[in-house]
Image 1 (cartoon, rainbow, N blue to C red):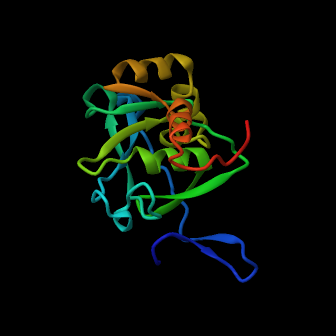
Image 2 (cartoon, one colour):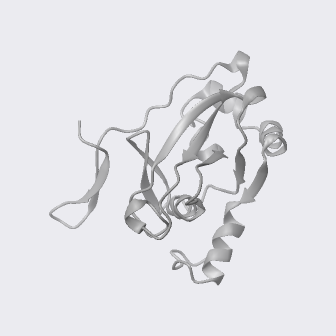
Image 3 (cartoon, rainbow, N blue to C red):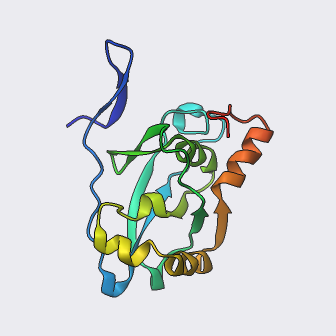
Length: 172
């Protein structure tokens, strides 16, 4: 199968071409967690995946929370679900809110990859067992405490809007 991408069809509508992202199974006894890794990009080269590029490399990695590499936890990351964008994770298609897609694009770094825990991506919302364990306030607080830092996506995007780094998509 060819690489996942979004193409515009004959009627001018965007359509997904490629396989949908499939979540792997987590070992709950080891308290395994998924992390989204944003790969680094070449500074000043939007064709390499910088903030203005369509090419943004993302991968999902799984680790036990007790042995997790440093990560940033992202809160308030749902966004307005009626405006959605496609992201490519491990070469597969995953649909997220437009706000979350823009956050990921602007949060990348030219000098290093960034490991994120974003519950809207890292927790399989179609798996009842995962949801009952990992979609609780208690677990979120545990992740925020274990994180190297915590970023509020809504505040981050408001700051970008204030600096006119990108246009506002939806009026609040």
